[in-house]
Image 1 (cartoon, rainbow, N blue to C red):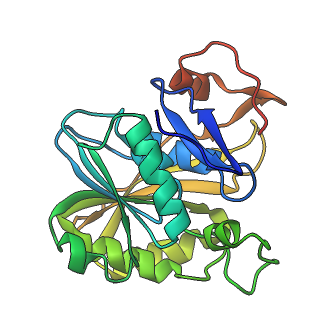
Image 2 (image 1 turned 60 degrees about the horizontal axis):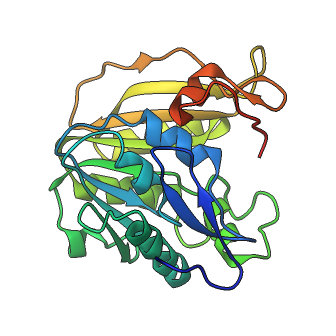
Length: 251
């Protein structure tokens, strides 16, 4: 049994029996990561890199999406790397998921360039000039572009992916134009997009986007993803991911 340490919790992801170790305060699983892990196109035999993997939640969920996957999670914070490795071991997934400590800007030198089929990223959504960063370092790095900026993430994906490789990310709607500009600058073409709405008839605040390297233009905009049916109750689509008909959401 993999033990938790002081200040940590052991939580049930409610997906395929997965468990995850998290800090009781600081960086914890967010719905953004769950949405991205279910949105990305995952195929049997994919070689996947998750950039800025944090506590490893995206690799854990991606592992349930297809067979014969090899997944690498890359994280710069040593404490989160160690925690994510324990979660991988706890779930018995050491042969399918590896957590590496490294800077995403040169991780292709370690993993190899042009040899992956899918890269995922839930990058920091705010520039350092926007809003006040958290006093908790892990949370600050996850939310604000302190250790890397969006261009670093896109550039890294471009170096890692093979021809026609897929890059999936989640970001805020106000940065959509900038995201698409950067993707095209680095040889990607947006191919699949979905806007996320908290409730029906509410404006979207986030979007999911999947692009392909060296692809022709052929963007498909999927139906809106509704998070809640009503306050405190997840939508039916999200409940299906958890295999439940009822769930009290809201965290």
